[in-house]
Image 1 (cartoon, rainbow, N blue to C red):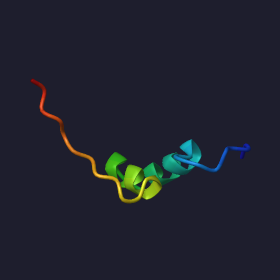
Image 2 (image 1 turned 180 degrees about the horizontal axis):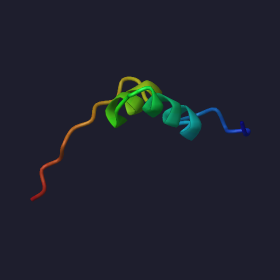
Image 3 (image 1 turned 120 degrees about the horizontal axis):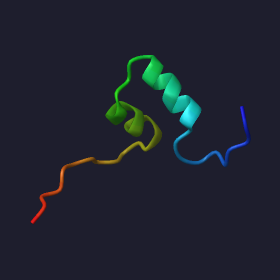
Length: 43
């Protein structure tokens, strides 16, 4: 479906992963391997 640039997160693929029960962190790590997600303290 479509002609994306082949880089980054595919919205159709992400939707498919969500339909399989993956949460947003699992989906982000699927597309962006090696990333670290953490909360930042607001000052």
